[in-house]
Amino acid sequence: MAQRIRAFGYVRVSVDDEGPNNASIAAQTRAIEEFAERNGIEIVEIFSEPNVSGRKLARKQFDRMMGLATSPSRPVQQILVFNLSRFARRLLTQVVSEHKLAEAQIELVSLTENFGQDATGRMIRSIVALMNEKYAQDASLFTRRDRRGNARSGYWNGGPVPFGYRSETVAIEGKKERKKLFIVEEEAIVVREIFDLASRGLSGQPMGTRAIAAHLNEQGYSLRGRKFSHGNLDGILTREHYAGFYRDSTADDQGIRPSHGDAIVVACPQIVDPVLIASVAARRAKAAPRVTAPRLTNSPTLLTAVAKCGSPTCGCGLTIRTAKGGRYKYYTCNARASRGASACDTKAIRDEVLDPIVIETLLQRVLLPERLKVLVSHVIEVSDVANKRREADLKRVRSARIESEKRLRNLYELVENGLEKPSDRHFAKRLSERKNEVAQLDATERSLEIQLNDHREKIDEAFVEKFGKVLVQEIRNGTPGNRRAWVHLFVQQVSITNDEIVIMGTKAALESALISGAKRGTALVPSFDREWCRLGDSNT
Image (tube, rainbow, N blue to C red; front, top):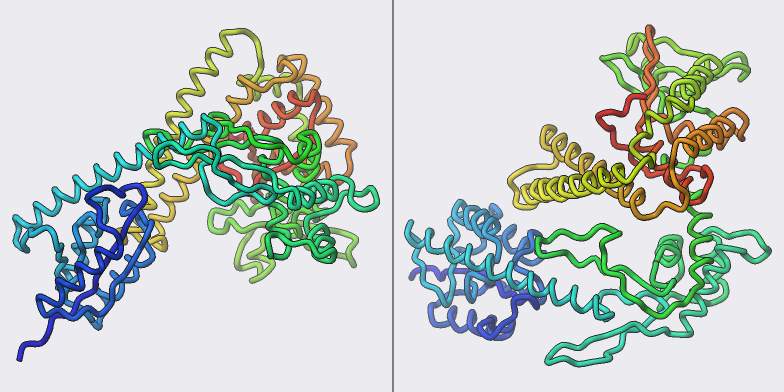
């Protein structure tokens, strides 16, 4: 007696590609079970994915099915689907998955399409897969257009409703329910309390998110049944909805999400005074340890985390050591300190020698008025011609950023489809380079947008000179913490060898600080991002 064929079933429905010819999950399941019964096939398991797009590269149940089917135990000989579009709506996923199944000698069977298993059948399946992908792209395009139109009309596009609001249907157009946000007063009271605590605290001193969370939890407040924490309070304090608007970032027809400035602004009921929100945001930005871990940020040592060993065979960071009972401090290579002098030949250098060299170099080579004007010439307002050039630069940078994002997505797709491994050293390097490229272009784009649209004080040579004097004063006479913060803002790396000291930084940091100062009419206490991207013209 011949052994029965064993099979997995796979059923899927996506809201985007739902149409008159697409069967429901129940109908697909019933069709697979009936087909198996007629043909004497044993169904081992049916994998179900409702509301999941076939264009997604990662599908939980699909990936689990493929992993089980191609495992060494080979539990099935077939995979049954209602039609090929249920299996995938992306040609790459279709081809790669079919190749994996073929290597495992597993047959993919479409109940409503008879392709055959020969070369002609495989070719026809590829053509149908391409058509399915085109259909899915069109459906996704129509959905995005509808969402953008919905946002422009002031409607809520769905998703998690922010604490303090509820969504409510206000109009019905055909089968579409149009919703807007409305205030839930019991929750809004808590939101206002959170911003008050972040601004004034209980005794006139601002409170941090952990202290606020502890206070609210002690008072019996909850976040829709959950306890307050640092994480969810940070989300509340950074949510723009409470000021009376939010930005909808639905992707455009090319699938590219708009920049912050280009997103659609949608009005909603205001819960907190925008001035209070801005005040809290400014205070938190100054206090946040965004460059490095707090143990490094709070260190009194000037060059912690930026001083590196410049030896070609080493490249480790420099650590701080003490001598003479703590009377002297010196920077030494971490490899040398950990494994002995044989690990690295770079000698230690006293902090009282290295720190003044870095500070004086910054003051004399970067912040002198004439040098500073050259370094930030890109943002100095001199004429309408400069603005036109910036507009052209913005267009060019935006196009480059979009193209770079596409290349980065392509790399991620290779990983998700099993064609590349993140652990591969060369691939990891390519991925890192692409991510850095996108970050640099995004930062440049935002800088140009601010220069064109958000000046409160004209940036000219006089302002640059005034800005430089303020910085020199801060670095020479400011508190140790502020001095260290300014040095870390402008100095990306200090590379030490026995023969030379190389100091590197970014013009982007200078431009960002200058623009922020122009928005408020003065220099700011710096706030930072965790990661810095090395620019081609970064040496100062």
